[in-house]
Image (cartoon, rainbow, N blue to C red):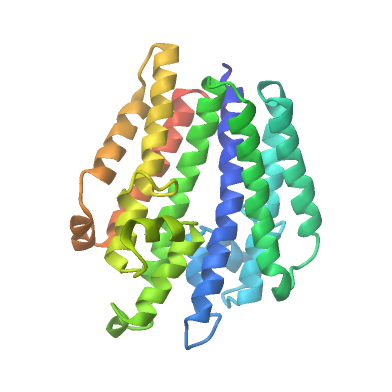
Length: 314
């Protein structure tokens, strides 16, 4: 496969996943605001930072962050390259460049995702409509995944799409956990309180993990078990361990197909060992934020090395 085609597939699915993940971060911010006794705008700076969108927001809008300004920036602002609207367009543009590598159903779902979201986000979203718009973003992303899973050959085309998906998904879950670290607790005395537990349950909902968690651990959302579930449980489709497993598997299929192991394969093995060699008590002892920071750095390096090894821009 041409490197440019591989890169188009990789980034098309990264953009699609990122648009959905941005919607999930906004939903997490909304739910967190309901549990805060102070200003409802206080946590949006941290949500923007977790999305990697804070610097651009400040450059464009100034240092004062408001709920409405942050949400509009993340959803539809054309000056924000990571807004949902720009991500949908970027995914479609990448899809056009790799059109011959996609089935008709896969391409149509990507194109319809762009057209639907362009219509939904053509004007500022009123607060009353926000839940429906966030649901629509997740649904359109799910339609693309369904078309991909249901119609595409399990070959290198599929592998590059999956690697892009799970690198982006792992990045998102780690960032949502970091939102918890930065903004959920109004004070240290709240740790372990009913407020703390409600806020942790909000994190579960933001990654569609509430049902799976309750099936595994019961109805009481204890922070230690939630962190374990979202970091280490290989059965949970948005956990760090699950995502790293999938990246490792699809890179392995590429190594088998092409008959060569590259540096990105070794880096993925190291990331897997870093993520899954510790139990949750070790992670908490070293610091959740420190663990997440290290994970995100390694994940970003892996994505960059994959682009180099497979010559995405050649």
